[in-house]
Amino acid sequence: MAAGIRPGARLTDMRALSPDLRADPADPAGDQAALAQLSLWARRFCPWTTVDSSGPGMPGLVMDTTGAAHLWGGEAAMLATIRTQFDRLGHRVTAALAPSWGAAWALSRYGQDVIAQDAAALHPLPVAALRLSDSTVLVLRRLGLKTVGDLAAMPRVALARRFARHDRTDNPLIRLDQAMARLPEPISPADPPARFHVQARLPEPVLDPTHHLPDLAAALSRDLSVAALGARLLRLSVWRSDGEMRWIEAGAASPTRDPDHIVFLFRERLERIDPGFGFDLIELAAPETEPFAPSQRDLGGATTESRDLPRLIDRLAARFGPDRLIRPQPQDSHIPERSIGTVPTDAPAAPVLRSPSQDRPARMLDPPEEVRVLYAVPEGPPAQFQWRGRPTRIARWQGPERIAPEWWLDRPGTRLRDYYKIEDEDGQRLWLYREGLAGDGRGPAPRWFVQGVFA
Image 1 (cartoon, rainbow, N blue to C red):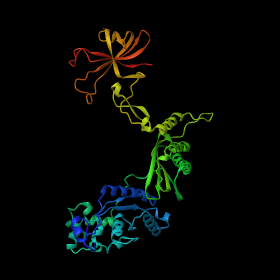
Image 2 (cartoon, rainbow, N blue to C red):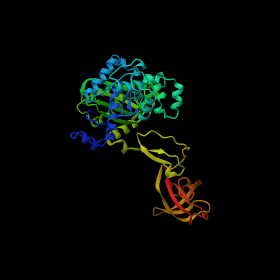
Image 3 (cartoon, one colour):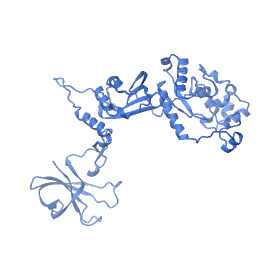
Image 4 (tube, one colour):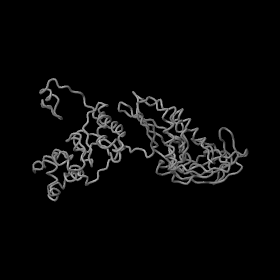
């Protein structure tokens, strides 16, 4: 800066002033990702942290330390610890503690590591400390308002009339009220911390969380039990000594709060965590939970609900991956082949708006298999047809059940279906349908298909 180098200028012009100027390619996306990662690391001091891009210039970090300062021995000790931890990561920081977000922003950029007890500490600062644009700052200076104290002493009516058309984020009065804590400005992290989480702070970095996982699982299970909830998604996070954070997740086929089962879910996933040179903070959280009431017990003391199948699913998912296991799930469609879909086993059950169909075949054929009709009954099913190369004669039948096309999905000209439940001479029960009606103007003669086989 002493040589005349200034941000935003052309590189060739600046090299004319300083031929030895070193230039590195800018990486805004990488800087943003690194800052977001740093905001997650900073949650070791307090849970509400996020990237601060609320004002002009380079972004920083903002933390809501409400209720957390006493855990570090007070505000002064907390501020000193924050500076020390950032120094160990290789970051030089200017930090400030203030009653509001706007005041902390101003003091961290125009002050030097201060702790403000009230908003009066802002009065000597320039008006640019209120997170205003350069054009607004220029207007205020032309009016003779150079400091925050000058602006605060002005009558509000005249200022409100002068800046009535300014955007909310560039209105001097609104920014002044935010800095003076007269207008609320809550912090909203991108991903709020889980409601159920337990942590283990270690005296020195370790490379393997295995020995700490059982105690964390037991503590988390107690919290879930008190709330009558079970975890559907579990997240194990570690904060490394180099400032990076790593985590792994494990889903459960059904709500669980069994500590041994939680430990098992992570047993074959722990090797996916890159410990770096070690980590000194471990957190086990349950971001997704579901109601999980205690199981009813019979007179012998045994539970009436078995957890064997969900645990088997979790074991298979841990071994082969959750994307390799699927389960059927009803869909909102009255077309038989669309009424059942498949989802991963760890996906939550989706609500279905339609009523479930009753008395459907246990085995559905996809696609339906066409049959050759040998003899048909008027307004009824074929009396005899050939399916899979074998002639079949109908002994009994029931129907029809008419299913119309879904006009919002099907193409124009799609024909309706008449379904029949039939039983042949050998006792085999089939689900047969006729596609279209004679003379409906939507194609040639109707065709017959076998859709399913009853058990």
